[in-house]
Amino acid sequence: MATKIQIVFYSMYGHIYKMAEAVVAGAREVEDVEVTLYQVPELVPEEILERVGARAARASFAHIPVAKPEQLAEADAIIFGTPTRFGNMCAQMRNFLDQTGPLWAKGALIGKLGSVFTSTATQHGGQETTITSFHSTLLHHGMIIVGVPYSEQRLLAMNEITGGSPYGASTLAGGDGSRQPSENELAIARFQGRHVAEIARKLKG
Ligand SMILES: Cc1cc2nc3c(=O)[nH]c(=O)nc-3n(C[C@H](O)[C@H](O)[C@H](O)COP(=O)(O)O)c2cc1C
Image 1: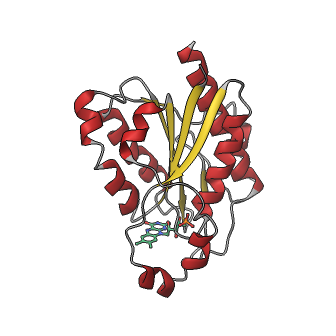
Image 2: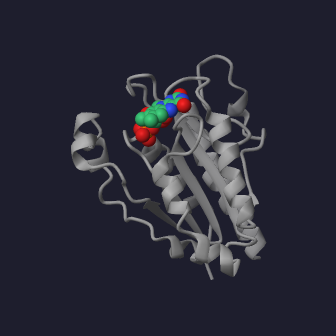
């Protein structure tokens, strides 16, 4: 039976969506894995999305199905993508995870792999805190945390501004959101997808 990898994200301006597509591509490089991409439900009213200039970006990935919390139980590994909000995950992802109490009560996610990627506006705006604080929820669920090891040499890049850390892939959107994920950041995201899928496949054995 195929190893099942779910990528579950929220994105307001499209950066995390682009990173999520790269994670999907990386995971799909591994044989015998079934990879599905989901987004979590939006909580922000349409008129606010319009006012903050997010409607067009959100429309570009409106075709991605919306996750239901109980679906997580079907996965062997779940890779979560969230933009930073004040150094933490976004409310949309928090709200989604806060509906996983019934899964927690059954221990439905125990032993599954969990991994996180993120996006911030600024270089030091909380990428690592967002990912590591997200890990607490995954550990409460009994999940096994997977990051990005330094065998991914792109983590060492010093010749350009780049996201990506041993905690997970990341990108920098810029204060006005105009910066897009760089090739280095997308490659780290592909690595993370592939790495999680490889371990999940071995564990499923
Ligand atoms: C309420 C709010 C809080 C934010 N907090 C931070 C922050 O703490 N650090 C930071 O660098 N960027 C912060 N940002 C910028 C977002 O992280 C940025 O818009 C996001 O990473 C872009 O990803 P997306 O295009 O997938 O939505 C914040 C944005 C909002 C709306």
